[in-house]
Length: 268
Image 1 (cartoon, rainbow, N blue to C red):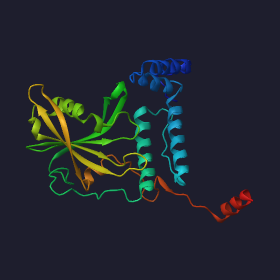
Image 2 (image 1 turned 90 degrees about the vertical axis):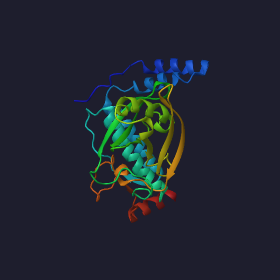
Image 3 (image 1 turned 90 degrees about the horizontal axis):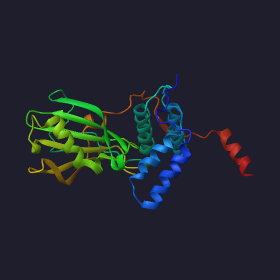
Image 4 (image 1 turned 180 degrees about the vertical axis):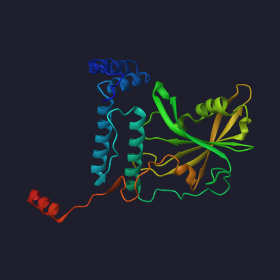
């Protein structure tokens, strides 16, 4: 049975226009959140939202002359299900677009974390937070607990709200107090971000966010970024969709001789 969209509104268009008028009249970007919510409220079921996202993936694949294999999602899928599959499809398409934008998957020199063994406790979880303008946002976080340090990596999900890169100070402060404060000093918590691809034409990236700690306010403040030339395999593979390697999600479209003849007749 299809899962209903809890925010469905048959009068979504009027709701959208009201929010749009507020944005136009006030310039207040917070109303963009209301526009965003109104747009998705047009769909009665989550299956319709799933189909919207997957149609967008197919259109993008067509632009780049790619064939895309979309994994099956039942009609009772959730927002999290849709975001997970959509992000992997976007990554697969972007990998073909960038052609060589991938980093080597091995531990960077000087990084003493995320080794592919069981010497440290390590957990990866889907992490939800409130982004800019109250947008619901999400990423993955991989946390490794060592004896003298904790290493936390944010893995970006495409089209999942505000990027953790843009909120690294706020997110690190929150996670430190929630998960790490009883065991580690602020300087013993190390922070990283990983994105498979930064947008349609971007490259893979793995960075360390070196944060300063404000003792008086008990929060992280300014950030400096350290770029690595490779990414630990543990991080790169921690949230990848499991697929048969013989059946890639995306592959170049093959044009047959019959297709060539048809194309010639159309051109004539």
